[in-house]
Image (cartoon, rainbow, N blue to C red):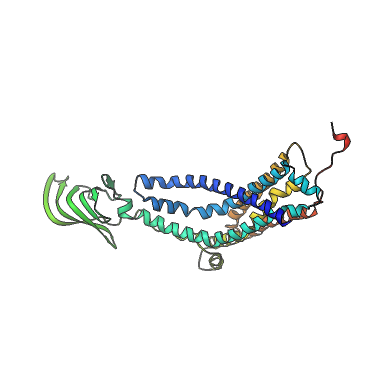
Length: 372
């Protein structure tokens, strides 16, 4: 029987990898579109683009894992029926529990892996993504200033850079300052050096000209300089976001859920997330059973198992939808947590009971009167 388990488990694993990688690739492409503008318009380095989009994958994997396993198990067991392999197994006296054992084993392995992803992988990835997002959005040289183009800032300043010699050294720069309503200052210099201070970035200009247009008095003045400092002030385009619920480990979530110093809604949010991380891994086993139990229990039909497959898919979608619904409700009402557990373990108990009680010879014999 071990050879039978290995035979089925290998097919499930291959199918699971194909499905989950395909789905993750499609979602990676859709998520990466949000960052394409940073690459094309703001000069985000490719390695940072790849790193930021890759950090979204643990969260996506945790969501897709049970669904991909459901599809893989459904495909494998339906193929076993189509090729008459499952019929031979049942006819030889192999019970449905033994045939389903490979799917259950793969589901348990994925459940254990999801425990790691949910409680260690996702918090680390989300924390790193938040740090990178803050760094990228507030990087003065990488994200704001670009060679050969005009950059307009929110404080009515426009900067043109001819060339970057290195990260902080500039050759050829023009700064147009319209902070004051009735005055416009245009500064042109041969070179400059970017410096960072607590109040914001500054550029130390070398060998240039400063021109001032007084619109109120209609006066124009110009001066040459050897050294001149342009202060950009506070140019932060984004403040560092508050640590999200997903960035915390399960111990931190339950500890914060008991913290009397935070808002009740926030405590409920922490508690709901903590319980969801306990429940979510079990969906791998539940969806694997959804996929195979119907095919193992239902009577054999030479015309296909369309009704059984449709029913199993509807069950999977219903449980998944209820889980999302109950999770959102649990962030507002604590008693809904019981419904989250009921939504997972009641179907798990039912399909397990049906699987165990299935007779060994599970397909219906055709009577002589049924043959036309």
